Length: 199
Image 1: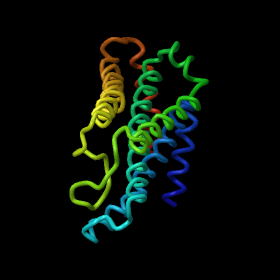
Image 2: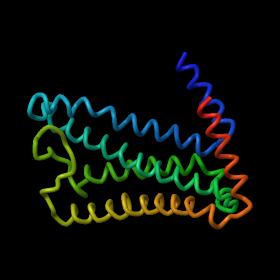
Image 3: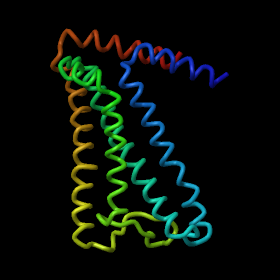
């Protein structure tokens, strides 16, 4: 019965929310599930007091974590940006991306794949972490390619997306102060969404 109620809520939300926002949440769910898939391997490594799966599995484990992790970060930031566009009713940006949701989401998955694949080709490196129970980027090996990879992923993979998300949320917080008459209309939309989500 609870599942049917949740399905009913999702169906109601799909009728109200913009297509791209709903689709982005589905993609974020898949990326989050991808991150969760590897957790049993860490638990087994901790239980056995060492990584028992070999070098290939270590590379695969690290690739999975980086791929789905970076994809989740970029999808979350994209959702923040879309929400800002919808709430602030920025039509010129909405019109530009409204027909490109599939391409943008595909691009986000490709970005996640690029960040995860680079260490497999020598730009950075995956290895066992210091406790030898799971695998991650090799922080001890700071050669030039690793430094370049870490700088690039820090700026383009973390700082830029989180900066966009924080800026989007800041613009949403500032909205009531600057929009005047549109505030009641937007508050009404938010109130309807909350009622639908809770019934």
